[in-house]
Length: 232
Image (cartoon, rainbow, N blue to C red):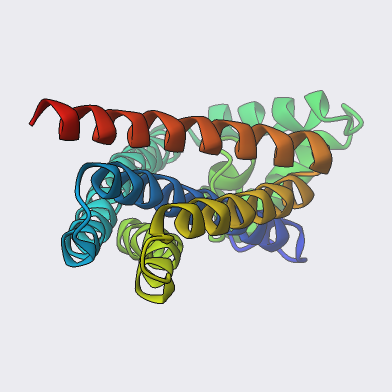
């Protein structure tokens, strides 16, 4: 597969991983804090809240890992199929593939008289790599890696989910719910700002958005927990 020079593709790949990590941690905080607050509203037993939160962390991390692994594995299968098809076409119609690559370069702004020479030289070095990069958009940096994606998603979720659990342990007796809620909202706001900065979006708007929806989720789960406690 293609190995482009320069750090552009690597920078894009790093940015993608950073955004995914922020989103995973965001999910971990929101889902675990919501679960903790819902259970805390239904029971006054701190150990039950802690057990529920820990179970939510493990289940959420495993779910994130499994979902990411399946998704990225499907992407990898599609990439392999595309490369196999391209390899077959190169073995049966080299000239046609050269014209196709030349047309791609012309569309990108290369002079029509120069494009065939560029295509010929690149294909002479590594025809499959040239087509993988410029026709299919596949490079070494962007190749799907299912296991890496699964582990990264699980780790990001776990890191986020650990924060509400720590707040459960550190909270003074009787203040578990407000401490978990406030700490979670602060962390969500911080992650929202970081995610916006990475993506080049408006930081204030993104921070307000994630904080609002996080607060709404916590209110809903707390309300449901209190309701179930009254019905029990």
